Amino acid sequence: MTKKKSRKKQIGLELHTLSRALIFIGLLLCLILFVVQMRLRSRNLSTSSQYPKSPVTITKPTKELEKLVLPKVTPSGESVPTEDTQPPLVVIVSPKRNETMADMVKIVVNATDNVGVNRVEFYAGSGNYPPIGVVSNPPYELLWNKNEKFAGANNIPLTVVAYDNAGNKSSDGIQINPSGGTGDSQAPSLTVSEPYNGEVIGHMLHVKVDASDSNGISEVVILVGSDQRLVTKLTSSPYEFTWAIDPIYYNQASFPVYIRAFDASYNLNEQVIIVSTQ
Image (cartoon, rainbow, N blue to C red; front, side, top):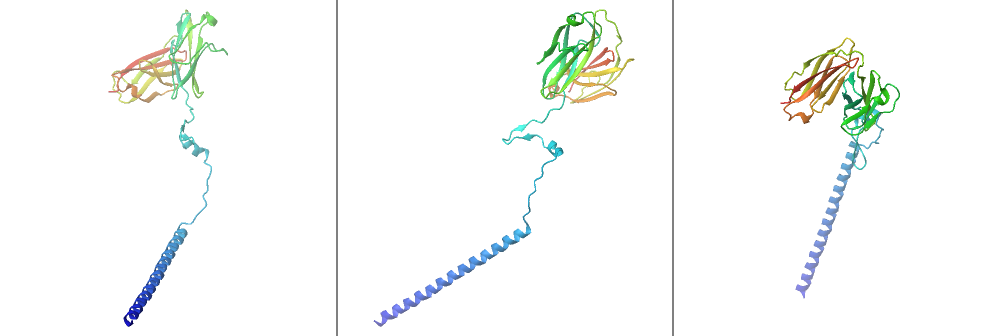
């Protein structure tokens, strides 16, 4: 009996000691958690004071800034084309200026645009006449009987107006004469300094010409390729222009450059220079 009582007493002491140890461990864990929380709170307060919150002010962009934001994008993410303000280039290829023509006149026009040509309108006469024809697709050509309104007339004005899809427009004009027409028939002088015939020009075409006439130069027109693609029209001296070659000409062994000088009476002097990019 004495041994049993002693054993029970020993077990009781062990349980008491274990319970006190568990209580101590629990208190220690609570203390550790408290310290960790205090440190985290202190760190958050330090970060907040280092980077104080400030109100965000959204200002409306100025017109100058709006012009720089290109291209515009819709909410769906699709790109919105910017406004097209560049007019097309247009030139009358045939007939020649001040040319003596038969009754039927074939008008051939070269028109290009950075986006696309919408249509070319053809006009005859200097009055407020309706167009004698409208062509919406290349080739921009029109066959016209001048005797319908201008039988026997001299110096008949022909005007073409090219429009792009944005409504920008540009024009070119000439005069033609019937058989037996009179007027200034002396062509202007034209000397091409650059390029020279057979020159390898690489990827840049530099044109430099000297043009003169007793009645003055109206314009110098530069066209390239067998399709006579219009590059530019120069209306004042110096008659000099540099053009970045279109890649479609890179692999061609050679192609022509047409340089045309027109005087104030629309007489023509033309030179054709053959060049290559390689």
